[in-house]
Image (cartoon, rainbow, N blue to C red):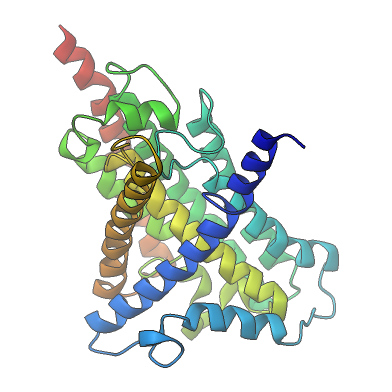
Length: 332
């Protein structure tokens, strides 16, 4: 095996690939839980590791050791495959994110479009996971999930395309690399994409099924929604997939609107600084999402649908139109 092939495998499996984002996802869960607790005058994770730092990892290990139960009457092949595919899909998506440079491990012209398709497939997995569980609670949760996520997929995609459209004049590209390079002078959030960033945050919150959009998993109404029947290793994989998805969406927001990991200078030191910059920007996005989670209560399903289609959808179309029209008007 050639040296370059070994390096490529290490990148995918260790840094900046699967292992790095798995650890990052667990770290972001801890930050989210601690900040959320502080906002509610609570302590949050405390005993496992310094300040409860290792609690997300301990929860993962605990679930992996617990009994794995498949409900009688469930569609076992689909039910068992969903957690594996959910984690695989999340880990595949993070390979597109630039961690220490302008491009991810996977980078090509049009990769931002492929990334949107991958995110849509996650919605399908959630629906299959709930509907295959042979549980009324899971079926209701999956129906809510498909209704919610399809409603917020369009604004999410519009905000992402808007971020790409703004960069067309500076650097015509539909790639993440082109978007990052176009922000070397001014971040998108400081231009006409401030509205796009706000829409992205709301849509990402709904994509992650976090308050006020935790309707598919409403524990006070339908136990745990589409995940009600999952336990043991399957639940551990689903929770890890959620953590990786959280890290992915925070990283995507930082990449599209906050300039991404702009290279400082070449060499190992430059790689470290750029990686730290990427993580810090991602944490900023995470803290905003946590603030939204703490400041709002759960919406009803009809309120969620009304907000998505009556307000967020028109706003997303407006910001996409501005992203396309304003650079063209300024060019004249």
